[in-house]
Structures are given as structure tokens and as C-alpha cells.
Image (cartoon, rainbow, N blue to C red; front, side, top):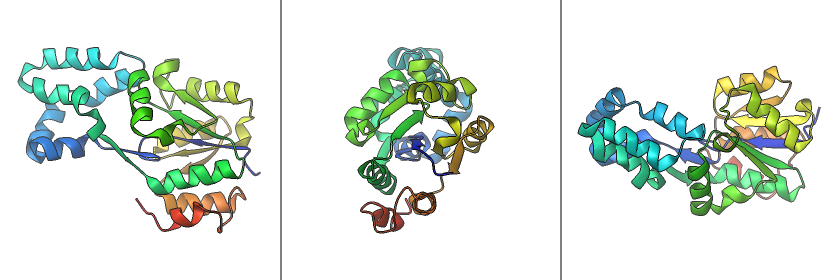
Length: 215
């Protein structure tokens, strides 16, 4: 069954998300390993993605771990160095779908403020027919509630939605609702899937670009 719409995750599908890489560059791998072991940075980020205020949440964490205060505040001050660059092959496919008049949505775990900041940094993240953002709706993937929000807003039946996501638990949650899914491992594989589904042709501008981009 050919999908009626494609739903993109953002982090590590359209936009590189690599805080560990940032800290490796900033403080070295050994210090980064200790930092992430001693400070629950991923849990902090999950709270932001669930709707907690970005700056205040980071600042509260820094105040409670004074030894690492400067490095924790980097999650506020150097966030742009953790999020990026764009995965150009995926963006090319997103744009190719829209040129073919295929509706394209975003379904992403992202903070309210960080999502708006990312859209300013990377205007390609504004190129959706609609976006469901965890920090705005108060539910994180793989919670079924966030998938239902997209279903309701789009008005498209679950079986006609194709989710592109790099996390298996999110893919499985979508499949449990009857969605079609693609576990993202790179633009080349995604391009093949979109062609197989009849959503793109191999000669479409953007599809050819993605085939040569394995970022």
C-alpha cells in the first residue's frame, strides 16, 4: 500500500545530533566519559524534550553539579555545535518528496525552545507540511500519544503514514499503531525505499543526490 505521507524524525535523520562528539572536541574523550557518567545529561535533555524550559533546566543541573558547571552550561551556550550539520542527502529526499506533492511531516523529540532555535539555524527544518514536537505536546516518542497527535492533525489513516526514524523503539511503536516504517541507516537506503514505494523515481532531483550521500 503506497503511503499518502512521509513522516521524518529529525535527530540523526535530517540533522546530526552528537553531544558526545562536541564534548570530545571540547574537553577530550576521557573527561567526556566521566562527565556523562557523573551527570545525567541525557536525562536532562529528555526533560527539555518533554517540555521543560531549556536554559533553566541546564542552569539547574549546573548548579547541582558545580564541579562540572562550565561544561554543563555548554548545553546552553554551545548547543549549536552539538546539533548539526544537516544530513544533506536526507534533506534532498525531503525536498524531492515535496516537489512530487507528497505531504511531509516531522515527528520529533525536541524541546520547545531548542526546536525553534534549530529552525533558525537550519531553515530546511521549516520545510514540512506540519510538525509534531514533543516539547510542544508533552509526550515523547515512543509514547503512543505523540503518534496519535500526528494522526489527528494530519487526518491521514495510520496505515497510510510512513515513518522514517533511526531508533528501533520508535519504529516498533509506530508499527504497533499500524504505520508503515523505515529504520533509517543512511540516505542511500532511504532513497531506495522511497523509490520502491513509488513515492520517488530514481531520476528525481534529490534522489540522485541522496544515492551518493551516505552521511
